[in-house]
Length: 367
Image (cartoon, rainbow, N blue to C red):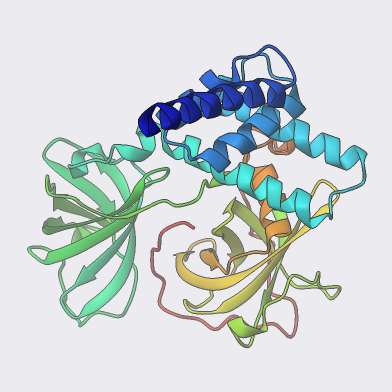
C-alpha cells in the first residue's frame, strides 16, 4: 500500500513538473525536452533554467541550439544587453550577475570545440613566427622566433637574452624550449642545437625536432587580436590597483590582444618582467581599466620596442562583462579595425616622468 502511494506521488510530481515547465516557457515549445537536452549536454539545472530564461527573452525559435551554437548564444546575450540598455539598467547588480553567468556559459561552449581540446605532439606542427622561450642549464631565459620549419630541423632566430661568455657557441647545446600556442596551451620540450650560423653572419640556429611535447598549461580565457590605442601606468605595487579611470596622461601604447585574463601591449623602448601596471583603453563609449603584472616580454632591438604580456588581476563583474562584450564582438566593435593592420609603436615613447626599467629581453606567453 505504501509503495503504491509513493509511486502515485512520484507520478503526480512528474505531471506537475511537466505542466510547470510548459507554462514557464510561455508557449508550446517542449521545455521538458529542453531540460533533458541540457542535461545531456552536461549543464546543471540552474544553468539550464538560466538558458531557458534567456531564450524566452531573445524569442529564439529553437532554444535547444543554445547548448551547442555559439552564434545562437551570442544572439541571446546581445538581446539581453539591448533589453537592459533600453531600460537604463546596465549598472544594476542583478543584470551584471546575469550577464556574467551567461558569459561563463559562452566560454564553456567555446572551449568545448575540438581546437581547444586537441593539442600537438611534435615540434613539426609549429608555424613560422612562433615565439619561443629558450633555457640553457643555469642560464636564460632567451627569446627567439621560428624562421622556418622543415622536415629535418627547425630554423630559429638567434636567441636574445642574458650575456653569454666570450666565444660561446650554441652548437651541440642541450636546450629547453617553452612556447605558447595560440588558442591552445603552453608547451615544453627539450632538444639539441644542430648548427649555429652566427660565425657565417647568419643569425640563425638549426635545432632538432622533438616528438615528445609536454602540454603544460591550457588556455582559460578567450583571447582576440586587436590594434587600438591605450595608455599604460606603472604602479608601485599590484596592491594599489583599482578600476578608476586615470585623468593624467600615461605611457602611450597599443593593445595587440586582450582577454579577461590579460593583454599583450606594444610599447616603445624596454620594460622589465614583474612590473605592476595599470592599462586603460576605450571600447565604444566605455572605458576599460585593467591592472596586472608583466609576466613576459619580447624586445625588438632594431625597432626599439617591446611587446609586454600582462597577466591581469581578476576584474570586477562589470568590467569583465565590458571586456567580454568586446572579445565576443557582440556589437561589431572589432570589425571597425582595418583588416591586416599591424600594431606600430615606433612613436610610442614613455612620457617624461615615467621610467620602465630595462631587463634582459625574454619571450613569454601571451595572456
